[in-house]
Length: 62
Image 1 (cartoon, rainbow, N blue to C red):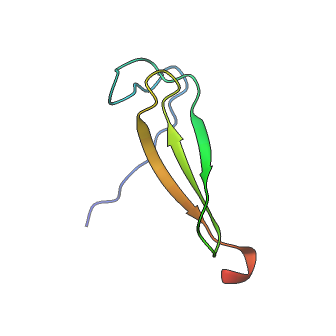
Image 2 (cartoon, rainbow, N blue to C red):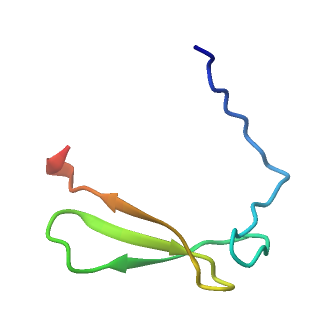
């Protein structure tokens, strides 16, 4: 099995997959309604398209 290597890029700005503008910042908002942990949605500040969602569990959940 081949090993996947990671490389730090400091000179390249990622592009929004929706509006194709360079992403220099990422906007986020907390999603409410969940009982366990917190959920956040991350989006492009230019076009407000969703870039991803994360779920952060409470410290006692492991």
